[in-house]
Length: 301
Image 1 (tube, one colour):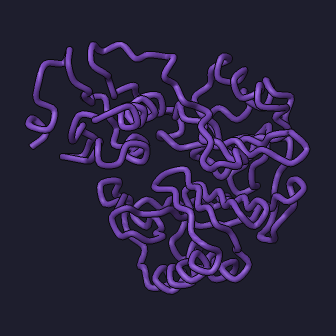
Image 2 (tube, rainbow, N blue to C red):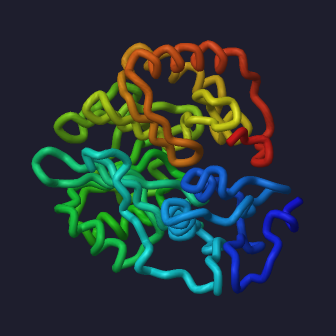
């Protein structure tokens, strides 16, 4: 199947090489063009027109292993769309350039009304990428959602002169953090931005909620294209699925947002009421989930 999908001369087609780690980042950016076969991404079909070609360039520049190659094999740096606005307001941008050291997680820039910016988790470290992010406005804070995404936090924070945030439950992953979130109560980390402790995926997992519009969830929950709904990664829960169920039950009535923005898995925008309805249903489902061994292959992307 994969051979037929990627048939043709490498000089004349897009392809995914064997370095792919199945992180899903590319499939989020080029749905219908890239899909999963045999535990890795493959190019399902070649692009038709400039829009689809742009989707593949976005996927290639996000891929943490640089596994996605255009015709001829050389990636055109001039076709790099990141940091890429997610809506017409430009308030949130996807950083792209996902890092192997964060398991290929997505990261975001959150633009504030005063012209400053917050970074939520981090892309791969690069002085050139840091300069690109700074060009959008001073970066005041680097907000880490949990330990798995902490790899480049200190370097970006030092470059920006920003505060690095993490929860005490994952403090050993960023022991030199400038701000440490504690306990389970929400804390304001900036005007209109709340940190909501959310133990489950890890002991120190945190949601960041901005302006009752954007929710950066790390790996606590995500939008699944398989189920067309909000899901938790119960097959990759490092701390406790029962704690994750408790976190949902404790916070579900406080969470009001339109944009679900995870580290791994799909992004989705829904009306407030529809998002709230789905979150309440998720809380009920997760309450019934038993603990299970870690199994990356069971993730329902």
